[in-house]
Length: 141
Image (cartoon, rainbow, N blue to C red; front, side, top):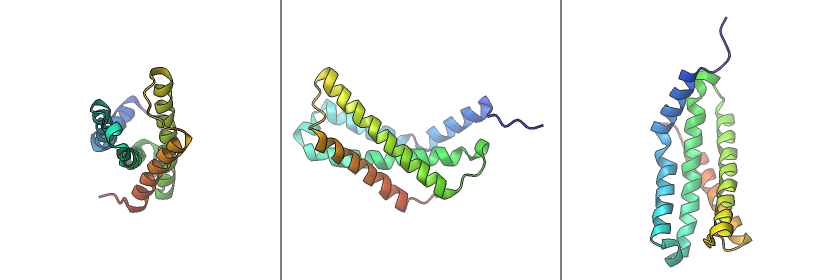
């Protein structure tokens, strides 16, 4: 009788394949973000925040699409519309947590990442727009 549980080997394989295939995307955006912080680029060029959040939405959606697609080995085939919806909603959740992160940094360390509610909403919109653009145009190679 076949077990329905996920083995440690399957889980490890899924994580490694997904990281190898798509971790570069969100890590690149985070690297750019850290570079911008280190050299005060966001203070010098405030509009740089817009493409950073937009590309963050693109990158994290790409990562989630890859992770969901690669999970088929142990979950079975997941219909494409479900993959797309799940990746988009997971990206939305990640965007919310990123904004929490920025607000916590401001509160604890006076980082001045958040310029107010409108800035937070704009950042969230930019990220979701990036997720939507990737969702509409992404096709697996």
